[in-house]
Every structure is written in structure tokens, then in C-alpha cells.
Length: 459
Length: 162
Image 1 (cartoon, rainbow over the protein chains, first blue to last red):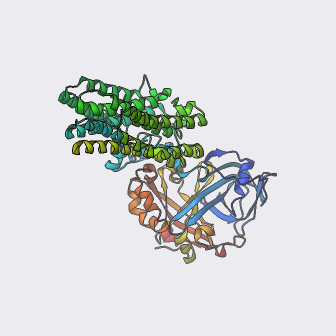
Image 2 (image 1 turned 135 degrees about the vertical axis):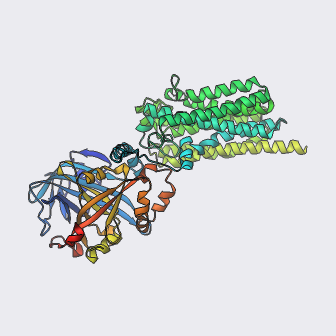
Image 3 (image 1 turned 180 degrees about the horizontal axis):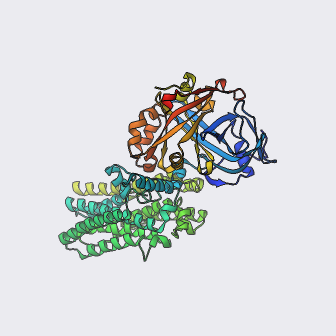
């Protein structure tokens, strides 16, 4: 085989295109090709054969199979296909390339090419790029069958996916911390604490759903062909698993339930402060993606999240227990607030190209990678500095310093951003570590307050 | 019952990939590498609705050919074959009909699918699938895979090809 190859190239998933020299370089990776044409009787036929790809002459020379002459009066294709078997499992390293053209008795001059290589375009991305085809097919199938045919998920999984339930840890950390600080002040009622956790969780899920509605309507989610388990939204509307109307009713139900619990707590505590905190929470949550403010589209999403999951959640939980505001929970609230904002910040990195297309000008869209990485480090340092300063100035108990044990996790995320910034799928592990950072810091701070509470009880 | 020559049945039973060629618009041959499954009578292929253009082509023109050409995908078996036939797309219920029809055959050949199935929530559209059922009508077989020698041709018994 000959080719003007400068190095191995592989076929990415690209629309059918006029062949280029690069396609010849891709083709020479295959040990043989399958030549296909449509017989006179209307059946396609295929035969494997050896070939020589001559990029200079722009032809593919084919060894004529015996007894099956390749026709010269119609379009013929050559296909290279590769897999790597994994015995007992299946296979990987899938790639293929198909070129079409006329055969002149010796060689085929390609006029059209198409292919896919999972090394260049991972399977998940290839699938996401193909979502519009699935929607078209199912719409046409519905017409054929005379009944609606839609993709489905089992109700539990659909609910989990629609609300992005696993992200509730972001609510649990500040709410539990607020309750713990109140308990260390001698205020704790278990059932109002439980209601706070449930109400905060419902509001969070309502915000998630609202976020999906507006990101679907803006086209941000549809333009994103590299979503991960941490980024790219729930995609239930993009996949046609739930309608926008269905999402709206879900959001209304979640916010309604959260508001009912919030108003009940306001009535029980008699705290108007709590009412204002609740209203602020809903406003910030909805304004995060909803017009006219669309905070996340303006690069203000991190600040909105820091406020929502920081002072609003933590201080709100504290006020439910104590009926008053205080410096300690306010200062402490900035720690989970910043760390949860950093979850959003890192999760926006793989979405930045599709977000830019949809006009969602998040910080990773606006800033160069080096600045984004530095921004992460600075924000993480500020979060840990708040803990240290809080202890130094006597606002937090000294046990809170245990949270510094999580510093290496933040450094690991920062280092991971340098290596995996441009690869959505390998960045997933970094995003997971970043989620854990909030959980570990939150858990350690809870432990710190638990020690104080126990000491108070036995003292 | 099936009529395919025994060496071709052996290829079908181990093949991890075969090249399905369908007739596209304008009569162009379009080839898709797919995992073939075989129940002793029909050949089954399957496709997510994500990658469903081939299904549209088959619905427009059901003539297809399946080439078994790559020894690497055939557990080292160097034989080659091309099976021509008529295909039928089964997609009354893309959500679950394929599970009833071909999941056991698929699992036997690609056990990793069990892990994918557990993660159906992560890939919901991948598991909205149609089955392509091929009734073989003609078979070309190259012992040892040498296509510089003429293939052995076998046709379906007339009554079964109808």
C-alpha cells in the first residue's frame, strides 16, 4: 500500500464529504477493504479484497476478486472496518471508513467519504451528535404506526434523571451545617431541622428542573454534544423523554412544595427574616437561568450559586432553629457557598463551546484556560482561608481547622484541570473529585461542630 | 430451518462484526459495521434509533448483503462469506421489543452489554432499538478467505426464499 502519509490519522465522525488526502492516510490503516455495489438484480453485494491507496494519483487500486467482477458502470464503495476484540466481553477500538466512486477496471477514484473512529470521537459524543436523527426516526415511526412512539425510562430513573437527584448533596452540606451551628448554640428541634432539609432539597430540585427548561429553550443543552454525568443538564427534554410542559409542571410542583414547607416554617418560627431568605432563594434560583436576568448567561452563575447554596441555605437553616441571624453561620456559609460554586465552575468547562454557541457566557467561556485554573485555585484558597480566619478571630471553634485536611483534594482538582481541560470525558474524574471536595469539607466541618455539641452536652 | 452452509453458520456464530450493506438513496451501496446474531434460520442485526438511517434505507429497499470479512472479528477464522437477503425492520416498540427478540443472543456474544443495560438511565436513546431480521437468500463463501478464487455459491431452497 502506498500513501502520502505523514503519520497515522483516523477517521472522525464527520458528515459525508469530498475525499481528501487525509482519507487516504486513514484508509491505509486497514489490512483489507470490503468492496460493495448493487447487483443487476437489486441486491447489494460485497467482497473483501486487497488494495493500494495511492494518494498522489488519488485512486484506490483494487485486486479484482475472481468470479465477481467489480462493475464499472455504477457507483462502487470500499469500506475499511476495524475492531479490537476483548475476549469474553465484546470489543473496542471501533473505526471504519467508506469511500464511494467509479471503478475503471483497475482503480476506484473516490468522490465521497464518510466514517467514524471512537478514538477521535468517543461513543458518547457520537451518540449525542445523533440525537436529532433519533427524534426524526421516532417522529416518522409515529406517523407510520398511527400512534405516538417516544423513548421511555422507568419512572424511578426518569425522576432521578429529570431532577438530577444525586446533586442534592450540594443542599445537604449547607443545611446540615446551619443546623449544626444552631445546635452548638443550644438550639435544635429535630422536626423543623428535617423539614428544612426536605424544603431546601425540593427547592434545589425545582431549580435544577427550571435550569433545564431554559437551557433547552435557549438551545444550550441541544448544542452540547459532550455532556457528562456532571455537566450538560438532565437532557430529558433534548431526548424527548419529558416535554417542556412536563418539566414546567414538575418545577411548579417542586417549588410549590418547597414554598409550602417554607411558609409553614415561617409560621412556626414567626420569623420574617426566614420569609425573606426563602423569597431570596427562589428568586436567585430562578433568575439563575430564567429571563430577564439569566445570571449564568452573564457570567454571574457562580455568584448566584455561592449565595444560594451559601448564606441562603446555611443561614436559612440556622434561622429556622434560632429565629435570628448571627455572624458565625453567615461567615461559615461562604465556605460551602464557594465550594459549591466551584462545582458549577468546573462543570462549565466541558460545556464551554456549546454554551458559547447558545450565548451562555459563563466564566469558562469568557476566560482563557490558564485564568480559569488560577481562578479555581484562588477561590479554593479563599474558602480555606475563611476557615482559618474564622478560627483565628474566635468566630469558629478551633476544631473547624480539621477542614484543612481537604486541601490536597483541592490541589488535585487544580492539577487535574491542567491535564484534562480539553477532554470532557477524562475531565469527569476531576469533576467527581471536585464534588467530593465539598462533601469532605462539609463532612469535616460537621464533625468539628459535632465535637463542640458533644462537649457542650457532657460539659 | 436454516440452509446456510455449515462453515458460514460457524462464522455467524463467532462474528463480532459484519459489514451490512444496504441500498441508499440514488441506489448507492451504504455499508455499516454491525454485530450479527444468528438463530439458525434468520440473521439478526440491531440498531439504536440514534443511528437509524440504515433502518430508513431498509424500509425503502429491503435488499441487503452481510459480509463476514475480518478474521480478527471472527476469532481468527480466515474464511469469508457474503450473505444476500431480504431484511425486515422490527420496530413496533423500540423500547423493549428488541429485548424479547435478541437480547439473549446479544448477551451471549457481547457480555459487556449487561453493564450497559444497568446504566440504561445514562444512555436512554441508545436502548431505543430496532431489530433487522434478514432472511438469507444467497450465500457466497470463500474457504480460507481467498477472494482471488471464485466463491462457492449456495441459494436458498426456493420455497424458503419466498
